[in-house]
Image (cartoon, rainbow, N blue to C red; front, side, top):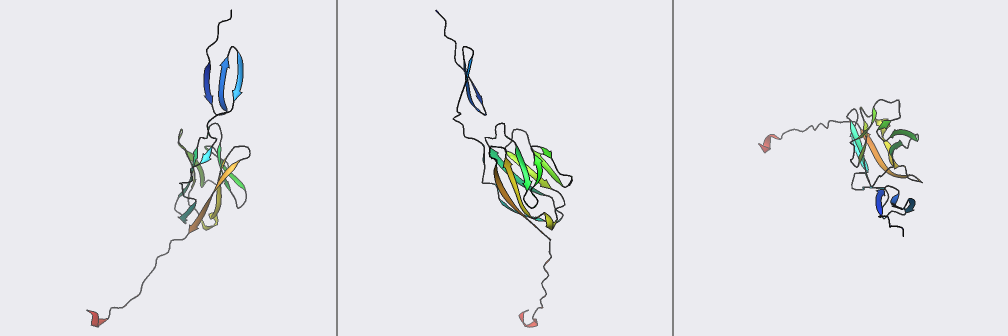
Length: 151
């Protein structure tokens, strides 16, 4: 008589693997795949010359990767924590084990305005657009006179 082997469970990003008597089988995961936390603002306004951070929050990322793409020229700016542009003003930021993936832009210019997309490397990829508007700081000056009669 053969003794029964214990059932061992190991949760992975691809599903639940169950190992029994040297036989490996995959069952679909009951976990939901990666998705965006849409509570993060998708419209951002920044000032010329003042550093701005575009934040993307991803839940259940698993072994997927987050990237930032600029729509204007379909330029891949970041992949994970790595920056893939020669423009030193752009930087990928991420704290390990956190859900936030940030694109930081130093000294932004008006030409940086446009759509930036946070992408998750699923098949097919899923993306969340962030609309950025860079404006110049303006001082509003009011000219008024005091009516002598109102004193």
